[in-house]
Structures are given as structure tokens and as C-alpha cells.
Length: 134
Image 1: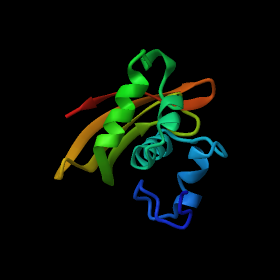
Image 2 (image 1 turned 180 degrees about the vertical axis):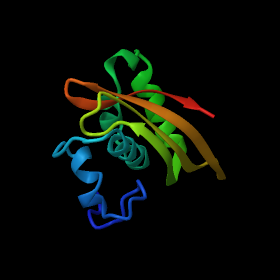
Image 3 (image 1 turned 120 degrees about the vertical axis):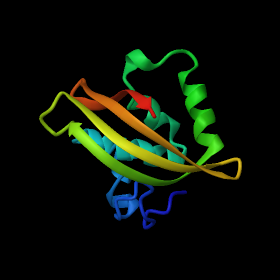
């Protein structure tokens, strides 16, 4: 059971119930690419594979997609998120990019992943398309 008073894993400083929780429960949709990116980081932290699957562009899902995503989420403990920048991705845009660093612990080691993620509108919702990892 989720603790709805806990701080949101996306590092917004808000409570999970007021931040990414509504997205994960299907009560709201992300209005910006950054909101979607933050909600996906939280979904990795919460191991919410269904949400990650649903918010990935259908053209990017192959037969191994869900299995690989679940394995990655289960191998890592996501600890912090730093947004470095964003380009477009607003409520009225059709595309957007968000640059971030995700911090995580894997096999007892502190690690980080620096990514520039690309998002698009698909059926009036933001979806993750792909990313360049630096």
C-alpha cells in the first residue's frame, strides 16, 4: 500500500498524493513534458511498470519492452532527480525535450544517468519517445 503523505520521488518537494500520485492512479494526465518526465521517474521509483508502459510511445514498445523496463526498475533504487533544462514541452506544444540527471543505487553503488529525453503528444497526451544518454 502506498503512503500518500510521503514526499514525491520526483523531488518536487510536494507530497506524492498531490504530485505524481494522481498521474499514476489515472486521475490526471501530465500537462507538460516535464510533468510526464517527473511522473515517469516516480514510476520507476515506485516500480509502476504499467504507468511506464502506458506513457511510452507505442512505436517504441517491442515484445521485450515491458520485461526490460521491469528488470531495470527492479535492479535500481531511484534516489534523486535533477532537472537541468527543458525545451518546449509546454501545455500547447506538440514536442518537447527535458534534460535531467537521475540518481540511483544499483548493486550497492551510487550511480547517475544524464539523459536528454524527447517527448511528443500522442492522442492528446504526452508520451516518452526516446532519449540520448550522456
